Amino acid sequence: MMVEQKYPGELASPQQIQELAEEYHRAANQLLTLGRPGKPLTRAPFRLSALQAIELYLTALLLHRGHNPVQIRKMQHDLWARTEHAVATGLRLRAKTVRHLQTLSQNREYLITRYGPELAATASQINRLTATLDEVAAKVTTLISQPSRTSQPPAGGQAAADGKV
Image (cartoon, rainbow, N blue to C red; front, side, top):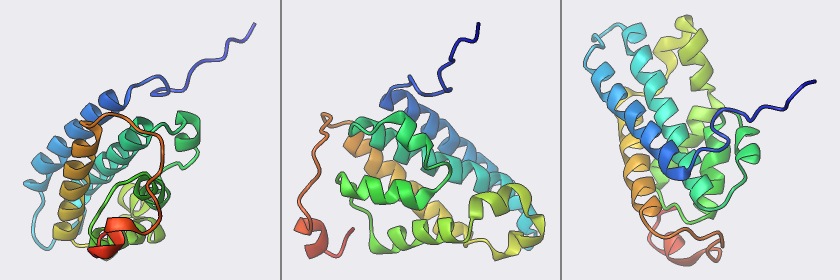
């Protein structure tokens, strides 16, 4: 008799996922200090931890806003899909950060970081990745500390007025 097992993380709370994101964020900050100038491969561990932290922060917010864990998992490692859903539920990021998250997905940086050492020099700039990670972390943490809501904000609104998405 086969028993269906829950997918790891399927029962995790948004707060637990956020805590995991914070640990990857801390690890990324530590790994950043180990990178050597002119040696892009030495930045790969930082990149992987940073990308994982961003993915987890966005996942935590989506769970907090009522998204189904199975549907989130179907996004795989697509940061752009997570970003679009997170923005639709009220996450306001700088336009530059949104563009970077889209570029990370389009350029498949997650896969390049894991499996493409020959492409390491083509990945986004370290300071841009750090800024994206820090902004996503701060804004998601603020939103998760507020009471959960599953309704979406009206289209346009203040985010469009102040140039933030």
